Length: 290
Image 1 (tube, rainbow, N blue to C red):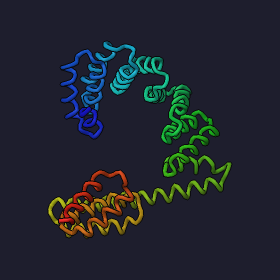
Image 2: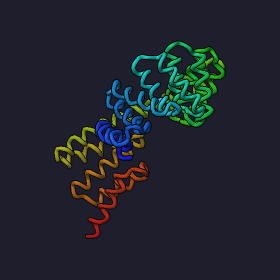
Image 3: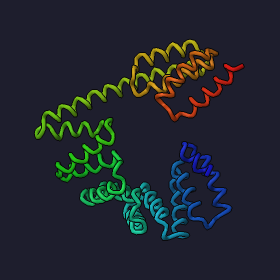
Image 4: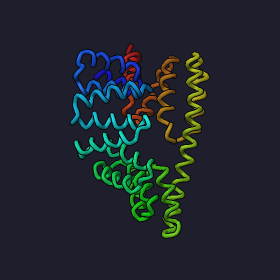
């Protein structure tokens, strides 16, 4: 379990060491070898990952998970024919394996088998109907097949699920220009506004990063000034929560607990699940009671 947590938080190297211990203790565990293989692949050690996935398939040939991971690794290794075989087997073993369908669709798309790729994605969308990115990719494949009406339907569904889906908004603004100019303009305006908003958020994030560099150097007053500038520039952009969180944390380090709590409370409303904000507020509460 610790290995899985490390792997999912970008610490694949540490995860490899833990999963290797598990494999050493349980050499006939297919799931242990799959976990080790995933961590090795995430660490850029694809040949070693392939060895673990192949061993997992030998130990559990009817495991859809093992077949899928071997198929995906073979695709990454540039061995599409072998990859296709294992991905198709994963689907036959588990008809609801959406990831195997996605990987196989990607293979088919690279081979210019667009009809098969679209068919696989249509099946995957039925399994995961609330995935905006899936609807968008399916729309792309359908558009390439000149199925414009179907493509528009799925681009619209992507936007319904994620109103900030920049690519889907753009494609709708283009696809509807001739058949529905008014709606095309609406989508174009939404696309432009969202693009501007993202540019503002990116710039504010860059300003915030510069402030963090100052804070790491112990220059708290300068960092606080720069973060306040970044927040003013951002307004209510997507980066506001992170900027206010970082400002609150730096204010706390500088000893200004009252201002720190104010910023952290504002940040918590924007990032309600952020554990660093919760811990900081708990620490401030204890300090202020002394």
